Image 1 (cartoon, rainbow, N blue to C red):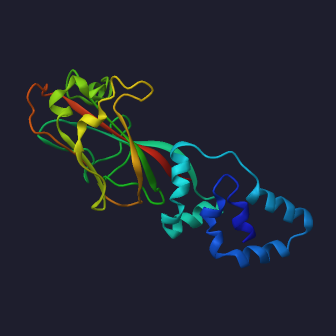
Image 2 (cartoon, rainbow, N blue to C red):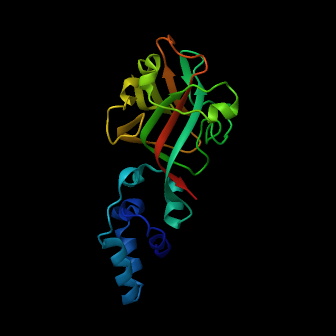
Length: 238
């Protein structure tokens, strides 16, 4: 238990991480073995009014109880920490159905930052919000695709009138929903193409991620059009 207490200093919601409601006796036993100074410092760490976490980090703290045991244990020991991230991928709009993460994908800077449509081992992501953008590179070469400006969907009506869905291991994070919700051009203070989830959800490590765009029509789309998807949130990382 003493090791556990040392590992939770960076977490405001330490009680949720440790599950202290279930280990009160163990905690009390550990406190009794400490000298008065150690007791005071430990109690202060657990009870002091630390500034509240904000944004997706605060949301992740609310979901600690849903984390797999091996992830919780690694967080407690300090082997893993929480970090802000965007898991992203670029894909060509070459059909009415676009799979933004695919099992044959290979991690490549500028194109995507995961392989095989899965998070690496020991990484769990709480999806707090989603970016969806589009752009038209000069050609389909990697450099041109990466170097393209990805911008608001208002410029791509056929995409904006399509649907987007997000699943992980067949569990729905966002059902088939109108892509119009990613139209943010006149929304001040909101990043371009960003939709904040009212109900953030976890994606566990080594689980297939399915982000799908379905179009009713490709009318008016340049055949070189590419889409960008970004899953924004908090992730566990070494």
